[in-house]
Length: 265
Image (cartoon, rainbow, N blue to C red; front, side, top):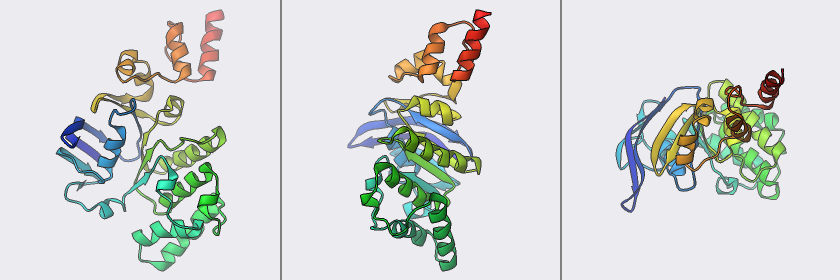
């Protein structure tokens, strides 16, 4: 579904992405991790066609982003910005959700059905002004407007920044449910707890280069790779690494308790 071959990109002749190659299959949940300035956001803009590669190819669902209009790609790819205020542009929740639907579809009955289903699923007041709501609610509205269009690929740029714990879990459980229905999810995140809990595979980016690509749990037990990318693994994994033998398969609280019990016995 997503294929990059030898992709490089430069801003004003300064290389920010260098010779990236990887594939993402339909229905995967993949996290892109790395330090600030590593090239993660640039990569996501390459994936949805906002940016075109300086060299190499980006193919999304058999469409080359160099030759495919961004508006065409947008019918297949939903992009959730880190800041919902950069995405929301209407004065009511209903208008915001309609905006994307009317761009994607011509069938008025389908648009009405999708609108009503989305409002019901998220329990929105359709007449509410998004800009008067909390950061978490605005993020939910931005996500809902994408889900209403039913994209095949969902790209998330730090989807939980600025949210409290309950808001964070609420957003991620919606995304998890979409993924279980076959939506491909690509998520940028600095929250390694979140990555461990939801992503099945991780791409590690450092200075614009892909330095690791593999199962999340395996990558989190590769300190030399994470050090190179200036990343600390989730706290439970950090503790397991320090404890050493007998804690190799510890990735959550339950597994930690089990491993400690075995050691004590």
